[in-house]
Length: 313
Image (cartoon, rainbow, N blue to C red):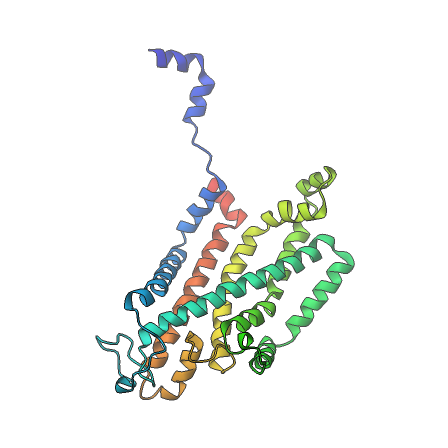
């Protein structure tokens, strides 16, 4: 009776209680992402790959550099799931040891390219004028030069250096690919800033006395984050392919350190009589990059404002 009386005397409260709760942006994005089955499959595949990358070297306790001349080029078997290579090394363990290097290069390269591209695009899009012309013409100049040519040239220069840290390891490859792959990010961020810099919330912040750095990093950049997240996700897959290309051509991470790219290079001469040495690294690259691209497609759909509005309605 008391509850009924309260509802009668307070109709606004009963109406509010009957209305469904408005979902947050995070819930809307997650709802859209879950509808993208390929993206969910990509997340599952990447999770399995990361778990194998972390736990296979720990569980097997196997040295991926250890050779065994008694088991050279053995086909896949119960003892060696993916077979062995030309030096008798177990391909299963080498594959996941190489995954650590390849994935590290992909993620680290993405971070460098996103940082450089975001700064260049933000400055060009926010200030416009001479700054925009200079930065975008430089970006166009970088895009006009074949990237593979620059990658090979700088990789060769670093290979011939006397500094051990810059010759043959993953660190110089990360720097080279990251510094030479920011142009697309810069153009994307510039376009977002050009569209957002004249919005009312930016003018209000400027009227309140906010400096340029606060407006750029606290107001405009968060509103451009959705496009940037998608581009960054796809950049990881592109970096893995670029590293594999360099390693396949002999200019990437040098043996005996395993990566998927140099495993393919070593398998090139064995394709006819030991095809498994190329099949498994090639499949690892294909599946990983495909999964990353699926996740990027799902994020693009989930973060699209027009799609979110339709879902909310």
